[in-house]
Image (cartoon, rainbow, N blue to C red; front, side, top):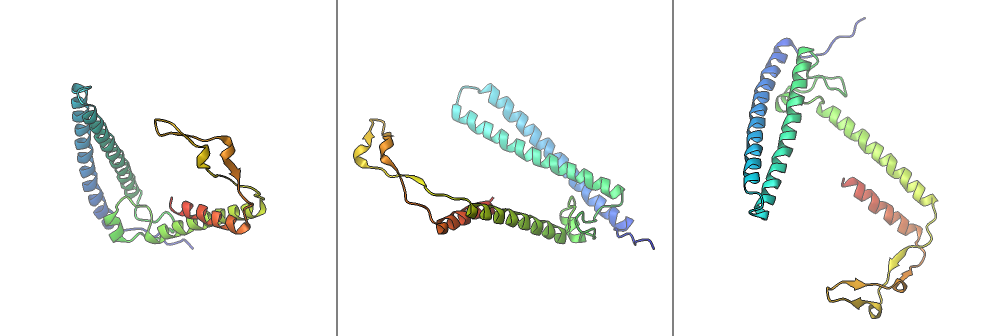
Length: 200
């Protein structure tokens, strides 16, 4: 027995196509405006080259920002064109993760999407599980390894000589070793590493 094909109707696909074409036109207009702005800034910058360093620096920053915006718009345009291809293939609106239909309202809001909310959540869950597995592996390795000494600075102010430019010179003798680090300290180090990973 053949599986029933789940997809949006031709009428639905036509409706999505109209939305995407309008968005594509807007993106093309935005890209043209950004390109003109970059060209204009570049021309003005080369004419005033060397006259004002700060102004030139600000102009370069503006050009970089506009270029970044242009790259994002170009990527969005490519995504919209891919969505139009999926409409032609009648595969538009099918979640690439779950194989189920993506909600109509989501497609209208984000017409270039290839994932449903459920699909995004599943991917996010898988990513979190993978990260958690990696953290556990690192934790096991660190508990099995032996760390006996930690070097940390201990400054003796009598041995610091001050230079006129406010820099300090430290003799090798003022560095000494601390006591052994405990396993509890290792766990704290692990937690700090894990917290750092979570913020990425």
